[in-house]
Image (cartoon, rainbow, N blue to C red; front, side, top):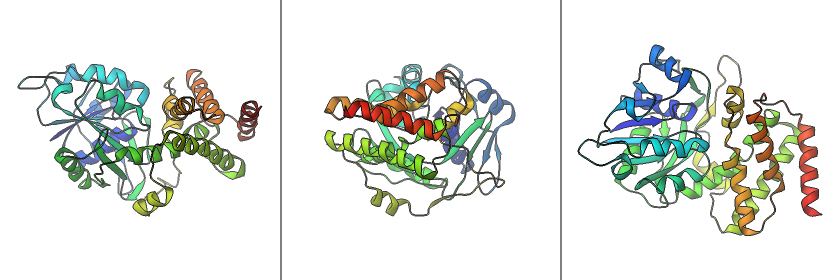
Length: 339
């Protein structure tokens, strides 16, 4: 199988780099300065055991790649706000022997949140979800890093909306030869909703910096309690914290590079790169949506969704809001709802 990594940023770049490093055939899809850097100098993959430069084919879209192969696996790793554009670009791409990518090829959604698979299933016949447990970073063109050891990450994989098949098992086998653990599960959404609860803190980190101290951790707890209440009201199953700990254990332990701790997660990195967009609409916004559908107030998640979006549009620096200010606004939002 050949892996076409659509969105070779943090997650896509690390997954694609690890697959290529293990001898699998990979094509990266990137844009702008990142595309040019990988094309001209290779992909620099910073991992605990070294910093190899991998010379992997890179294109900026389906036209540059040309006709797809019947054995291609499309791995969608863009941020959710970029999903629809990517699907519209790649769905009609022709496959050798006839038909299109949407008709013939598996699409693997390696993304945060739960919305992308639903969007994909409107166009693609074979959609797979991944619960991405992969601490990784992309802030510099041509460079991605993943500080996890002994495993780079854990990627639960399954068909969307449910089930497993031979394709999922073949993909998992390749991932497990590439520094990942990749359990194939029939209920991948259950793991993704658990990860969604964890990702509700991405906006807190993006706004105020690393979540530490009593004020920040207390706010994060309240935000996640809103999320839990919403999922329970909606009857949505999710893996418990105990189950997650039992599966993950100490398999992915972060090792600082050059003694410098990781700057922040995916939302923090979007602000650091000044992309102008952020994924909060599909993380905190997913909780707000479900809350409205099921009559559960979500003032804290709505606030974080709004503030993170504002920071992105105004290209403000990550971590520039004092924690006390965010907590004050959260208290006011909660009080308005209670009133």
